[in-house]
Amino acid sequence: MISWQKDGEEVHEDVELRETLPNQDGSFQKRSILRVPAEELQKHTYTCVIQHSSLEKELVLEVPKGGGSGGAPIGVIVGVVAALVALVAVVAGIVVWKKKNSGFKPVPAKAASEGDSSSNNS
Image (cartoon, rainbow, N blue to C red; front, side, top):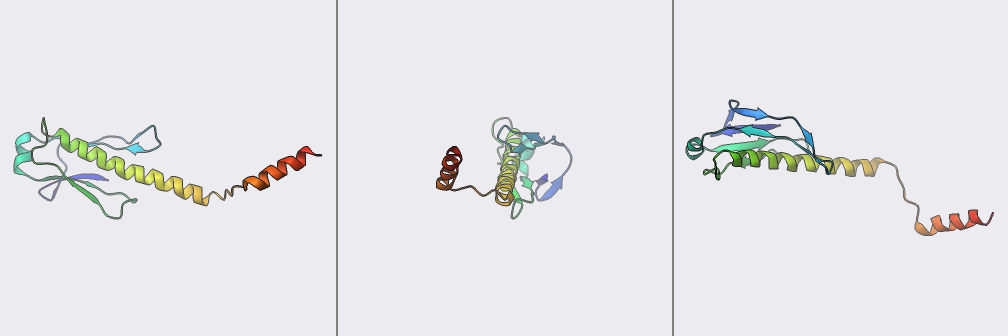
C-alpha cells in the first residue's frame, strides 16, 4: 500500500494510483503520484508511506522541502523507488522460499559421473 501524508495527515486529493506493472527482472513496480504546487512543498511536510508484508515496519520517506526542479516530480520519484524496493524484496523472498521448498536435491558430481559410465558399459 502506498499513501501520502501532509504534515502527518493522510492526503487523498490529487493522488493518482497507477496499476502494478512487471519489470524485466521479475520484480514489479507500482506508481503513486501526488500533485502538489511548489509553494505547498515549502509550507508543509509531505511524506510517502509504503506498507508491505515483506517489510518489518512501514517505510516513510519525506519529500524534500524544495521538491527539486519543477516541484512535485521528486515526490513521484520517491514513491516509485520505495515501491520498487518493497516489491523487489518480495520477489527475492518468493524465489528463495520456492527454492528451499522445491524438494530438489542436487546429485554430487562424482556420483552422477559414475552412474553415467556404468550405463555406458552395458
